[in-house]
Length: 200
Length: 354
Figure 1 (cartoon, chains in turn purple, brown):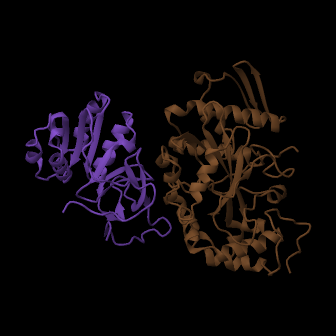
Figure 2 (figure 1 turned 90 degrees about the vertical axis):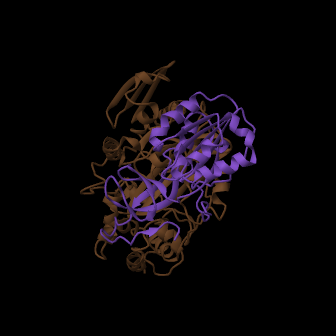
Figure 3 (figure 1 turned 30 degrees about the vertical axis):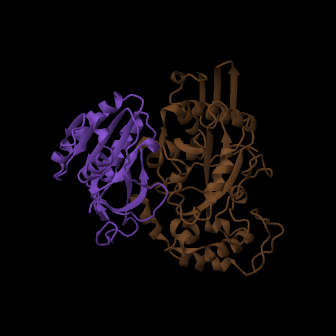
């Protein structure tokens, strides 16, 4: 099963919903990995959506590309990474007309970054639908060196840039599309607990 | 009165010190012998003579050295000062508010001469004499918010007001109690306060926001907040926490009186006229335990507050590990006698330590 119920948390932590078809002039759907399953379900509940849909998909090793293609969206792109898809996402948002609906689904990192692009294009974050699917790993910013570490699955973890041992906070920035990582052993250097999988 | 500005540091050798006058006017934040969060707002319309409440923007003996420290922080990390593009007008509002207030409240230190939009600003303590065109960014060496807050003690959050919320869309933050402007920029009132324990459940932020949304021009408000800092370090930022965190472990029973500081924030709130933004200055005052103990009332009360503080708050404020040592020290200054209500030291009327 690709869904996960996140425990209640603090007010800055994003909350995700379930994608629902909405009336719109066009539909931009951005997904990674298991997010494809949410798109398939969305298309099932309203097949007419696909005639004006643009799907941007990052498989991340999952095998859903053919199923998405079979939905016959107006436009389809599968890319090797978010970074590779970013310019296309920007273009789609720049070219967008009134009435565009945005749907984001998959990992938090994917949804956060795509939401950020949509916000920069002038779409309020509250108007963007999101549904979490798949990995619960997080996109983390090291508050010390500002480096981003993608797909962090354990707490604590080692910053992939400066090498500090960081604990995983629930404090989240939409502007940076990242959670905050803070040095865990600043007051007792070397005293770093064994990393645990998130939510265990 | 003429202010003698200290030549002192807030890092490395920590030569920061408070004069007798500074101790007397230190904003001790506890009005009773216990503490819990509350929306402790009051009007910011002056206060007792020579108190930190008297002027709109208090200037004290630390002014020149604090501004030097701010410049060092900004040179290391320019992201401590940021302003989203729509906040420039609010920056001009803030520049005007501070220049007008300081030149009226401290005419011997600051002068503002205005001829239409052609302004001349003299800041004597910092040796600045600049002429510029109001609302024309090209005539200042920095953006308006950065320009004036490089010359004003305290951190500054400039909050946009929309959708019945306040948004942290600009700020100058170099003396913060462990929060990051770069991370929180663009967040709303509930989001940037998200990590604070207990207060959400008590409805504190809902009530505080209602109050703040209704602040009117010319009717600023204020409150005190506090935390603890080992050594008189202004830049207790999360960015540098991996460098300063270790200092918390250097306390000993012998040095705690000199090293442990109560860190008090005078938070004020002003509505800005053109942008309808709210500026939220957070002015940091530091006082060592040993200096505070010269006021018998504060000695008694600080012991009782720290002793009875809920564990979550001592953890959030970052001194849970040092609390036992603090209490060993503070208990010597608590003889069990009652204390007078209010924050003022009442030195002449409170009984000496028995």
